[in-house]
Amino acid sequence: MINLLDLDAADLAAFFAGLGEKPFRAKQVSHWVHQRLVDDVGAMTDVSKALRGRLAAAAQIRGPAVVSDTTAADGTRKWLLDVGGGNAVETVYIPEDDRGTLCISSQAGCALDCAFCSTGRQGFNRNLTTAEIVGQLWHANRALLADGVSANGRPERELLPPGGKARSAKGAPMTAPWIEQGRAPITNVVMMGMGEPLANYDRVRAALGVFLDDDAYGLSRRRVTLSTSGLVPALDRLRDDCPVALAVSLHAGNDALRDRLVPINRKYPLAALLAACVRYLDRAPRDFVTFEYVMLDGVNDAPAQAHELAALVRDIPCKFNLIPWNPFPGAGFRTSPRARILAFQSVLMDAGFVTTIRKTRGEDIDAACGQLAGRVQDRTRRAIRMRPVPAAPSVH
Ligand code: SF4
Image (tube, rainbow, N blue to C red):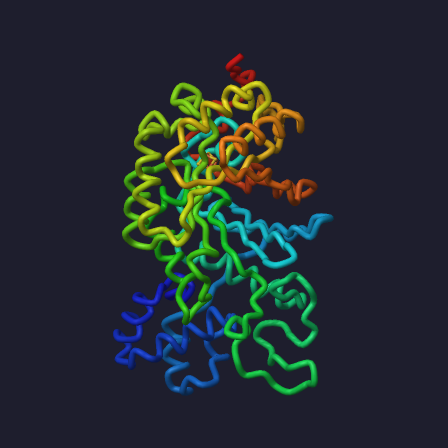
């Protein structure tokens, strides 16, 4: 059985061509799956009964199985989703006044082993399929709509659970899909959950296509951000195939320190990574790169290191996002004190860089940045190797 969540527009067109159907069927079915968010081929009422029968025999809409669903005091909501084989990944919804952001996972675990990262500590099992990536957005929109949550996080009473008939506030049936009406709760996607998205290139690329497709979720490229630790060849491919907003996990201003914090730096050092960022900006929907920088007490948070960082990227249009590190058991790091983060920020601001400090969200449900661990059947044996955890490295 084909899972329709696994198909991007080209795959869907090929699928219907294979059934001997006209190309418009692909768009019609895409609207049902991604905009009306149905989970049953039989619900596609403007598709002929005969075709629905053939579809039901060949395809299904199989969303993720939810292991747990937790909401934090600040409204951040985390779903743990079963992806089989004893693995589960996390998806996090972050409501804000003017947007609803979904942080999506791309792998069960991660092989890149960044020193400060909870996901990396779990080891790696496998890449997620396109259906498992797209299914996170599909599921979050359905679950939030079912709870009457709209794009700005406020209740929309007239919306009924997906699969049911939507009605306006006055009770009149609404025929247009929710997403076409601009009512989807998820307005922004960040590929910043578990895993390195560019290490799962083909499936992530297909999923991005679905997120952007006007016949599916119709998100603008500016509202979809991919965050990478710096796989340079794949970043160049993304630039050519599907440029979306870019965030790069930098975390250090020199190769010696970055080699320790982000080991992929040994393969693609800073000079190569920053050159790829400049190339990417030629095609990017935003005219800057966001550099993420996790603040580790006594490791990478000294004012001198901020000066070094500013000098390193002085020719690159960029913004900084400083991330107070979120502790997890046995990590071997400490969070930078607030005063140190502010001092680091002011050096970068004085050097002319827009620099924000990420507000920690969902801390009480371990949904904050770098805290996603999911459940990973580690095939790298790292989870075993990493215990007991060594003391944090220090540059001082
Ligand atoms: S920070 Fe990202 S790339 Fe590094 S180990 Fe964690 S998930 Fe993987």
